Image 1 (tube, rainbow, N blue to C red):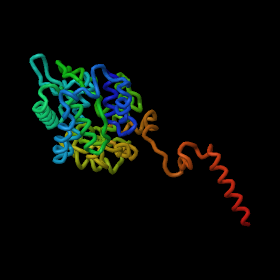
Image 2: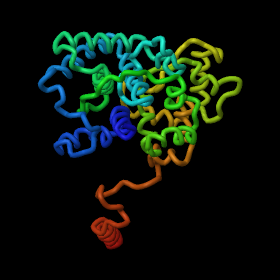
Image 3: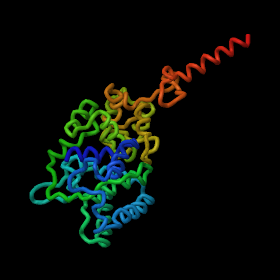
Image 4: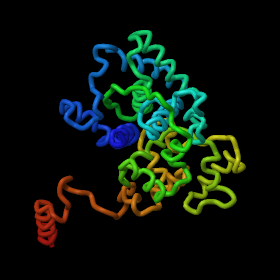
Length: 331
């Protein structure tokens, strides 16, 4: 189950088209790629053939009115999947047996509207198809469409999840959702339990290309002293938004394109403008910095042939020699 969650979240959150083609490739291979037993690319083809169009049509309307809800749905799916699998348990209300996952500290800031949207989608789907589609699958589709409709890649996902019968405990929720205060060492250690590599963690963190955060999730980087890894201008802007450590205001996660699913989040990090410690430390830590870095200025080269380094390009070297001969012959 952990492996399947890893593939799902990586595909969902990464701005890398390579990762986002994983499910496309698996489907093209007739399902030969490993997916959880019981899931299928055609699961609802007979019982609810219009499922995906119902979800996407409604979300287009939702996002046209408020594109910010895309981040809310994406985060809801992430918080569902990382605790005890993508089983829709985060949607469950509490009961006499204990508080719901929604009452756990990491979930208190989940958007109330996201839950409302999922329930509205469930109602629309059930009106068309009856009670055949799980809330877990609806949440997964909503998150996929949140990525696509906010500018990210589109991709297929296998369906057939069942809704969980129990919600996770508060301790389990806390243990499986890394807080924004984690540095890279803590983040890598935590996600290694789900078989995530450093590259996986960098890709997953790219989900912060859309969305907002409450000040209390990052003001420890501003007060009482400013985090030296934070750009001074950026810090000044944040202090205006969050004048005190306990401010109730919010700030965008990606200052360059807060409502568009793109790679600007990584540009933020390279300019020391990551909002959370868990974000900015990815560019500070040598284990992940190289994954984020690009060559500019006099670094690297402009290849004559994309598949060969210039130093190994015999044709290019021959051309340079001939040009030098022609230059000398002119004297």
